Image 1 (cartoon, rainbow, N blue to C red):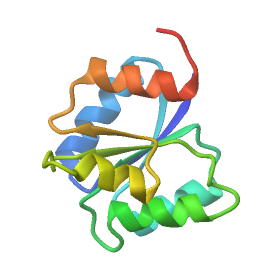
Image 2: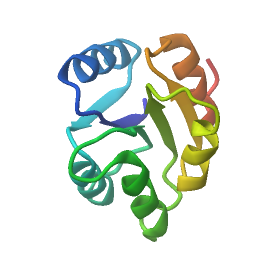
Image 3: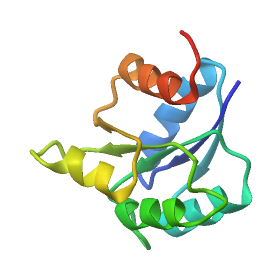
Image 4: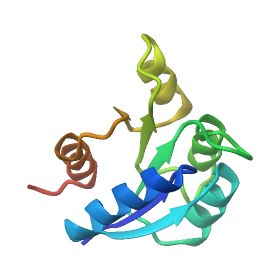
Amino acid sequence: MAKILLVEDNEMNRDMLSRRLIRKGYEVAMAVDGREGVDMARSGDYDIVLMDMSLPEIDGWEATRRLKQAAETKALPIIALTAHAMAGDRDKALEAGCDDYDTKPIDLQRLLGKIEALLGQST
């Protein structure tokens, strides 16, 4: 099963989402801020990144830009996770380099569909 890097600073969100993804058979590694997320993505072997956009150190927008600019991670799919559901936020996430966008609170089935679509897996 795919290896997911979850970049999320909120401990409760990180714990809840990681447990649900693990129950679905995914391997999950976690970073607590944007800088750690970028470092882990560059040094790890991940299939996809779930990137919170409101992060300490480096926000998710900048972390995504850095990953998409680096040769070793530019093809790594990134799904933006954000509580920002304002008009234009989806476009902002895609412009930063995210491959898809999902709003919080997370609807697990919807998110799984996006993960599987990006990974080319069937449900």
